[in-house]
Image 1 (cartoon, helix red, strand yellow):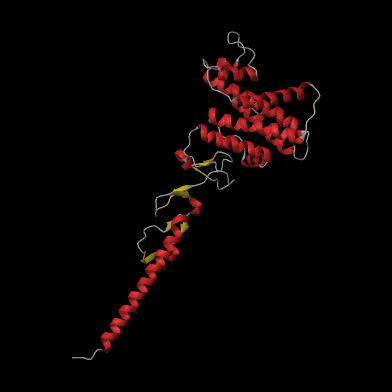
Image 2 (cartoon, helix red, strand yellow):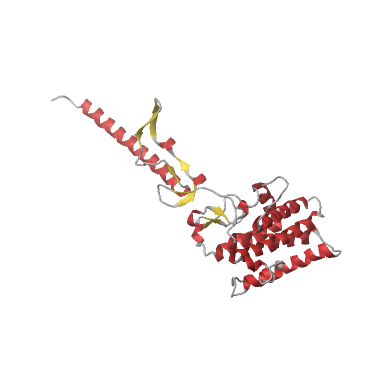
Length: 297
């Protein structure tokens, strides 16, 4: 890129506005005036995202008049084309369209007229629209928030209470829409919500985008988080000599890690085997002792 020239694709432009919207929303916690810029940038990001979906279907669809492609479609026109069964045929829920319409109305007031804005209302509108944008980008553009926002920005916007609620609802809705089996949805080790998906080796939270290793327990074959696995090599009878581990008794185990469901049973099993060995040893000692006490014949 030339230092004095900026070239952005449609989707890159959307992401630039989204990033700036998040920065302004974070700043708004200290300065309420930043909410107006957060909402302006976010509405623009939504509009560009809708156009990107149309562009992917056919580049001419982003223009108001396809016969004279000069001006691009408005946000409402973009929605109409996306829902048109002869174009994309994607249904946007009515409640989502109402939220978008309210945000656009607020954007128009901010840019064209005097307006009143409370921090609570601005946060609610921002949260609704941001959650929709996260869902839309992930569901239809196959772009995730951690590909767009840095981790610190993503975590900061999640920390906004109303935004967190909206994002959680949208993450749950996406799991439902993508028909992810409930046994593949776990509590996220980062945010704690039931939005961590392990389907198709995704291993990612649909809410906070945290990733985690998922591994198979070598003892029972069940899947669990890698950080939950327990190492029980300290229970195995072994010595360390000249850089090598010499195992004297593995107690029937070939791999020395286990999931939380198995570890206690394994500890009990090894303790029982040790106790049984001790009793056998004592019985053998007693038998030898008695043999030695028998008179020679």
